[in-house]
Each structure stands twice: as structure tokens, then as C-alpha cells.
Length: 148
Image: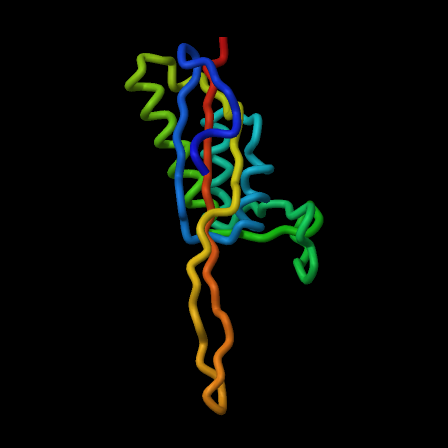
């Protein structure tokens, strides 16, 4: 991953990028889909509610074995992905403040999770054999836009 997958005007936007985070790609994609297009203050409040397990993230795509939550369909409380997305939104707001933008009236223009590096590993098995045990990483990007 070289840079951002979306173009943005530097005059009205603020960007941040998180590379090679040890997270689940599937859960991170669902969290990104949940907050895309929201105002930053609303998104941060909802993500804090997910961390407190008051509100669940609706799972639309990867629903095998996912239980239903009150008032919605299948959903979960993905703690690691939620914390990472919340941190990146706060970083992007800090970048907006540094650039002199009105960081209190920003919305999430673009947020995406993509595959990162795969760290190869091995698990020893019986009779001198082994099985691959790889860890995958996630790249996250957030672009905030000033609401005019």
C-alpha cells in the first residue's frame, strides 16, 4: 500500500493512515461500513457505545454464527477494530485542527480497510511436522471533510 485510495482536496480535508495494524480484516471492514459518511462527533459517540457494549456493530456480510442483538439483526462488539478506527478518527481531527480547519464540523468522507502484510509463522505438529500459522495485518485510511 503506497498511499490513499481516494483523492481529496488538501484545503478542506484532513487525512490519516494506519499501516500494518494487527486486527481482523473482516471486523474492521464492518466497523468502517458502519461509520462511513457520519459526522465525526456522532461516529465517535457510537464507537464509544460499542466499546461499552451498549450498541452493537451490525454485521451484514460475515454473519455465519453471529448472534442477533436487540433491535437489529446479526451484530457483534469488535473491540480491537473499534478502538483502532476511533483512534484514527481522533488523529484525523487533530490533523484538521493543525491545518486550521473547523474540526468540530467534519464528516467522514472516506474510510477503508485493506489487507496488509502477512507475517509467516509455523505451528509444530506431531511426528516432526508443522502447519502454517500466519498472522494477517490491516491497513486503515480515514479522510475527513469539512462541512460547509
